[in-house]
Length: 236
Image (cartoon, rainbow, N blue to C red; front, side):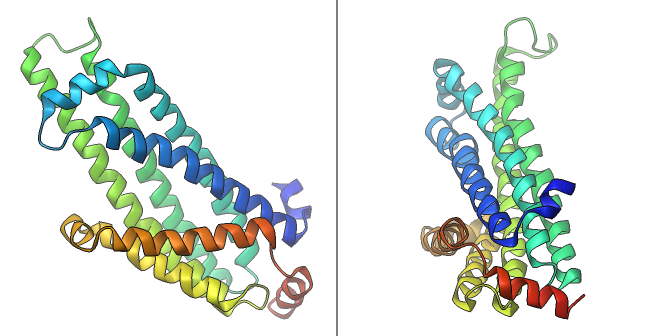
C-alpha cells in the first residue's frame, strides 16, 4: 500500500485500467460466458449433464471468477486513491458499495462451485436421492445467478458515484463520467431481473459503452497529473 501511495497519478490510473480489464476478462469468462454456455434455464437435467460433460471447463471458470475478485479489489482501491481529491466522502461511499459488490461476487462464485461437491461421487449427502441431489445442485446454480445479478446492481451504484466524481474532477473529461454514470444506471436494472430482461440487450450495450470508454481512457491517457495535484492541493 505504501508503494502504491508513491506511484504517480497517471500510472495509478493506467494500473487501475489494466486491473479493470483483467477483471472484466476473468469474471466475464468465469461468471458469465461459461455459465451461459452450460446452464439451461428450467432444465436441471440438461444443465447438470453439461456440467458433468465439461467439468474441467467449469472448474476453470470458477478459478477465473476467483482471479476476477482479486483484480476487482485492486482496482477498487486504486479508484479510491485517484478520486478522493475530488470528494473523500463520496469516494469512501463508492468503496463501501464496491465492498458489498465484491462480497456478492464472491458469494456467487461459491454457489457456482457448490454443485461440483454435490455431484462428486462419495461426497454427496447420503440422505438425498440422485434426483434430489440434482435438484439441489441446479437450485444452487440458479441462486449463483441471482447473487451475480445483485452484485451487478451494487456495482451499478458504484459506477454512478464514480461517474459523478469523474464529471466533477478537473483531470478527466466530463463525458467519460457521464457515460460511466449512465452505465451504472443500466447495471442497476439487474436489481429487478424482470426489468433487466425487459430492457435487454440495450441495457448491456449502453453499459458496455461506458465501461469500455473509461477503461480505454485510463489505459491510454490516464489522468492529467498536474490538474490532479492541483485539485488534491486545493482540497487538502
